[in-house]
Image (cartoon, rainbow, N blue to C red):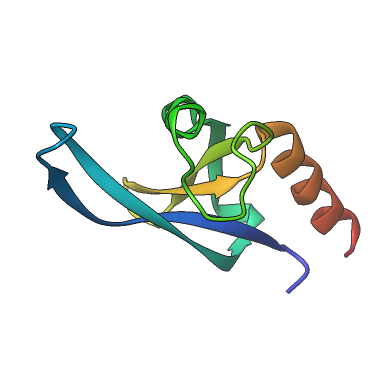
Length: 104
């Protein structure tokens, strides 16, 4: 399992319309995941989550002013990919990937 990297995924949960604010309120949850670093096609900063976090608290206990988010795109073995959102900047995620590669 040396190619696997432990990350924290931020997942969107159900959303509902709030008639008072005339917006859709979504909630988020966290989940520990293990990603095979060999399947990562690319990663980038998730600016949408960062902007949303600057407007409201996404996760109770998560300091939105300090949090950064990345989107990771994984090869699915076909001509497609799967996208996941994780906590951490692309630089931090890349460091974790490099550490997993050096652990071999």
